[in-house]
Length: 196
Image (cartoon, rainbow, N blue to C red; front, side):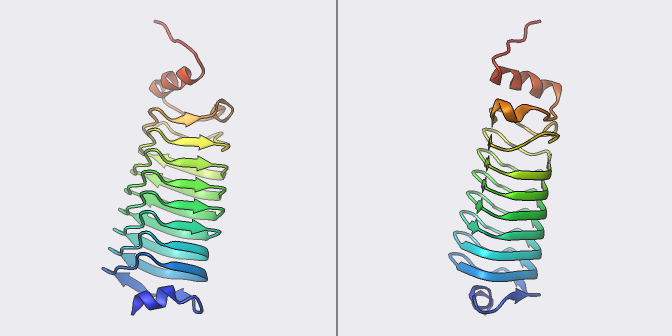
């Protein structure tokens, strides 16, 4: 049974396809999961600690309320997934795409990130805290009420995304890229009143 294969801490999970399975409420530690496909799989309310994920595609999967602690993600794609309430802490992220996914209340804390791409996704009320970022991309993303704390956002382009009521400390505003409407909204954070 694939649930036993995935939850076995003594063996790595390599080159296995998971489809239409319930793999929720698992606690997985100290293993590698790579070259796998997850399609329409329920992976919610689980905890992964010190797990290395590589070359994995998640399609139509539910990972809501899952915790990832001290994990590594390399060459991962999440497509049309539910990532509501996901917590990723003290982890490394390299070459990860999150596309057309629901990511409300996602928490990314103490991350080192390179090539993290959010596309057509909803990150309403998400939290980005203490993230070292190299090449973070947002394309048509909903970042309403999202919070960026202790993140160097210099050069990050928010211009195609909805950043209504976003929370960014003024020291992290320097160098971000926004459209004209967004610039007027962000000026309110600085106490600037624009008159015509």
